[in-house]
Amino acid sequence: MTGDSEFHELLHSLRVWDTALPAFDPASAPGQPLELFREWFVHAARAGQVEPHTMSLATVDADGRPDVRILMLHEADARGWHFASHATSAKGRQLAERPEAALAFYWPAVGRQVRLRGRVSACGPQESRADLAVCSRGALAAALTGRQSEVLGSPQELAEASAAAWERAAAEPDAPAPTWTRYVLDPAEAEFFQGDAARRHVRLRYRRDGRGGWTRELLWP
Ligand SMILES: Cc1cc2nc3c(=O)[nH]c(=O)nc-3n(C[C@H](O)[C@H](O)[C@H](O)COP(=O)(O)O)c2cc1C
Image (cartoon, rainbow, N blue to C red; front, side):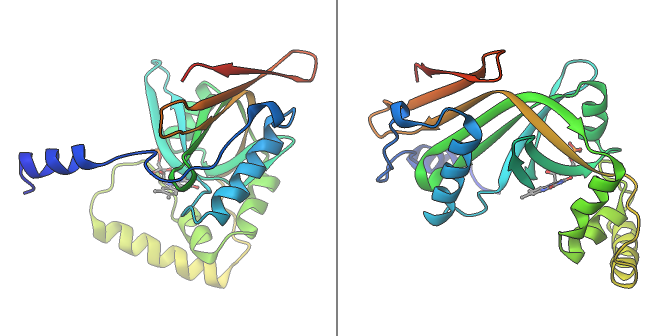
């Protein structure tokens, strides 16, 4: 087992914002967050950020207890930020009960974080199934395996169910995956954080102004 001192020494030797980071002038930021998100996303990917399309999705359960996990971003457009999962999973049940969530992206290669909060709507069966059509066979096999977030009896059970799902995904590329659901988070607010070595981080928050536009404000870091 890794010893206490080894762990603590390593932990405390690690640094953040210790590299050359890009500048961000909030005064020249676009009037709405989608445009800035796309700009930052492309910039992060080009700067070598690994898997910039992975994000944390935070939800709350029926008792108000927070939950969080990593998901993949499937789209970001005028409707919002799209992701997909099983409606029967823990997050799916939480979203059905309380359709509010938060997303967070962290792109350390450029010292940037993006946070979004808003209402989540579930897309209908057609759009949800179409979501899988553009994904890999592995994604379809995973969707067909199902039972996400249920207690697993043994690795063997998963191996068998997964093998059957891969076989079905190959034979029947249009197989229905009834619990697979595409969701869209429509942000009420979005925050863009640019890290800075001197800790003068730039935080720009967009909030819906109730008239179809966005209010922009800076936040203390
Ligand atoms: C990099 C990465 C990407 C993931 N992408 C997804 C995804 O797009 N959809 C999904 O349902 N689970 C995805 N997962 C698995 C989730 O993090 C989580 O384990 C699963 O959805 C069950 O979450 P729940 O029990 O809170 O519902 C991903 C995990 C990782 C590490």
